[in-house]
Length: 177
Image 1 (spheres, rainbow, N blue to C red):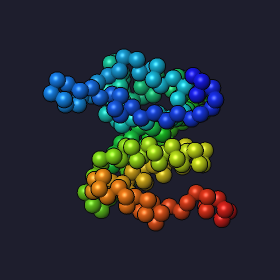
Image 2 (tube, helix red, strand yellow):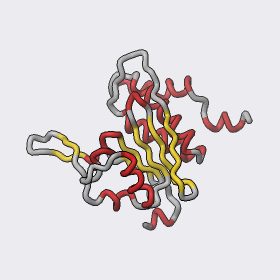
Image 3 (cartoon, rainbow, N blue to C red):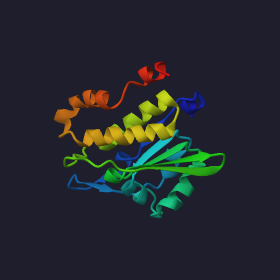
């Protein structure tokens, strides 16, 4: 609560929290009984479609989950959809707004390992820089697509160079206006 009171933005990705581990050390998707407590007053929450479907033991459809989650004083909900893009849901003057970002067609077979983490990092970075969640989710979607063209963690070092060729630095863009 102290961090929230200080105005420190919190971005939370539900990925690992929604995973259990069975006796054979295999991961499985599990609902969270106390999911509302985790969501309360967060700036941004990220989850995949699959995580959204299984978050609550009630197995809410997406619309019902959004209507249950957003009154918890969440600023932005991000639902990632893999190659089909992402959705941003925001509370605006007591009304829900939605911005769907289409997927990006890749020329090579996608390597999706780490794309959610890259998406979350890119969203948080651009959101803090621009204070514009719509621009941030569009940027995050593009960065995750670029990440999907890399072959595993051994090529992750290429990401900054690829980003530099696709996106001018935010500071340089602001100075040119």
